[in-house]
Length: 267
Length: 305
Image 1: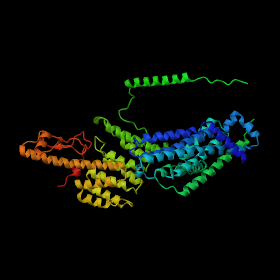
Image 2: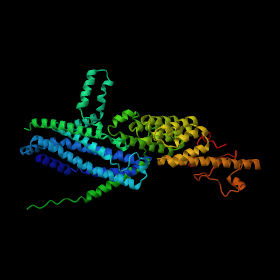
Image 3: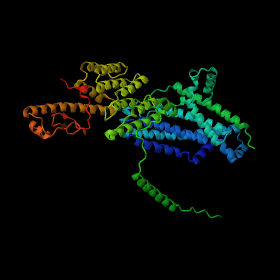
């Protein structure tokens, strides 16, 4: 366990050295500038639009961090040949993979935590400047349920990180980026595969689609941004099952990454 | 012992950067004076299909709806500010349809959108059919939202002048669980006295005093001022008729009428713009410069007999 934490700490420190926290500053500036500009042209919908923008920005910045750091986690070590020095130390290959994953998740948690704080600060500012905004809004300004959406974004990013890490174990950074982003897009269309049989009259194709539905990551249920912004209840059951799915699917991807990396020959 | 490397000064580079930036701004300003970007004769909407836009937006459909909503506000405001002859609201409904397809719960898009669509030219396209279609779409997506049924009733009442339909929609709105209590009496009054200016005043007063959205309240206040202006026009027309009966001709201008009626000044509408007097017919009307212009069709809000 200590070896895993050491690798995770190194990944986190490297992300700080790579100026990843700058994304948080960019996020805060973007939101503050938007809150002023948006009020000029939204016909009283400032609060809804700032919430939409804040949640979407957290998701996008998080995705960029997960993909662009995730794909370099293993491939960069191999490219630099630092993997030889690392693996000559008392660190097993599974520990190396798990440490890399935990380090990036820690980076995401810190980044998203800071972005969430900035998000609530902007909402608080809007609430102080114009308390009337809240009257017509379907949910309060400082709605704690926003944290549900943010929590599920984090869980989705955990799955995306595992996908990026998996591709990073055997392909080039460019290919890993394309594959990870492709799988992220597919993950949001995945629900269509489930109802394939109602679209085509071919049982074999419908069966293949159903298998693909269960095999590919299903990311659409992680998106409850609209529900939270409109004050529509999100059940605890949905959140619980989606988080369970995230943990299990991440487990599958990490196991696959370990399996590939264990057999990889670095000679 | 090795001597540390002395970092070269970047002062000159910073100065060059600032100078180049100033020159770029100057070049841009000079260029802008003699060049305008090409704008097609009518706006183009590349994506009109709601379901397609929904797919393309991935998990950001709400944010995309917000962007399109801002485009609606800017588009509508832009058309209203342009010259009357150049106004074109063709893209208004497709844009609103797209916004509400991307975010079916965006209730302001239905409610404000229907106000924008129903507004008669030149302030809007005067498409009451599209206003009703948009609100019906909202009601289909969220049947518990009684405000959409109320707004459909308003469109029938204010813009179409069909009081039976308006009363029917007010009743339907009142039947939805959680609806405001004043809807049931409103339906009855509309059916009994539809089109009466007093019942219109009661209707808009309810919305102004009990409405939940600032924009709707402002619209209600505007309509109430229009009703006040219509009352004032009726009074002024009586004055010009009295003048014509005494002098055998209509008054030539406000000064003449004011002197005859012993007024201290010329009459102003509730937006503080002078009324217009036609010296040929003696009829009084609202100035096109008034913030209350145009008034609704007189038949939809007739004075109490």
